Length: 236
Image (tube, rainbow, N blue to C red):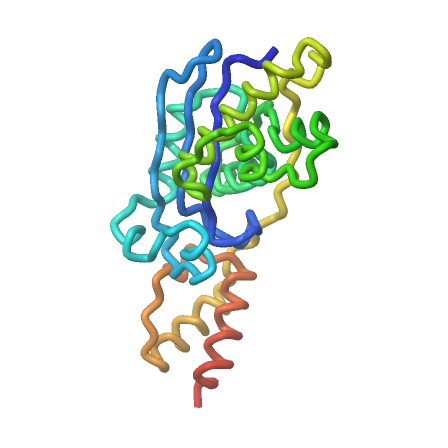
């Protein structure tokens, strides 16, 4: 049964691992059921975050301004987590973002995992909602800051052990880690033509970009070009 793992949660700028950015990683290292280490880092995404994300998480552009970049935080997280299985509520969401961002750094990230959302769905047909907040209310788990990465990771850890204590003897097969499967969509880099045209647009309209042009994908560059032209017009 799974008793040694890393409980994780991330906050992001959106729902797409290929298009959106990680802005926070929170994690707890659990050895034989006990928390032994904690990890919590904000990440500067190099783009403004939406009002919707700020409203949901409380994370603002100001908070992220001096935060480290994704490469630094991911390398620290990898050292912290090692090759331990990962646990979280809807873990495939967090895992997909981590896998894509590790891949962008040339690092293969393959882990086994445990999903407390899947557990909740399998074990609690009596409950209408199996969201993390709903399950915390049901089990009396106090989550001081919902939708912040570390607090949600800790809540998932506590939920796992509530479920484990209540159901493991009845259905022990539910409490073993499983392979996590996420196929990364190919990320094409910005083309030289896009790069030149985007640089010309930015210069012409006197726009200051937060994300360096060189770091954009082909699709990101295309969306930004369309957005600039729609808002400011073409180069005359």
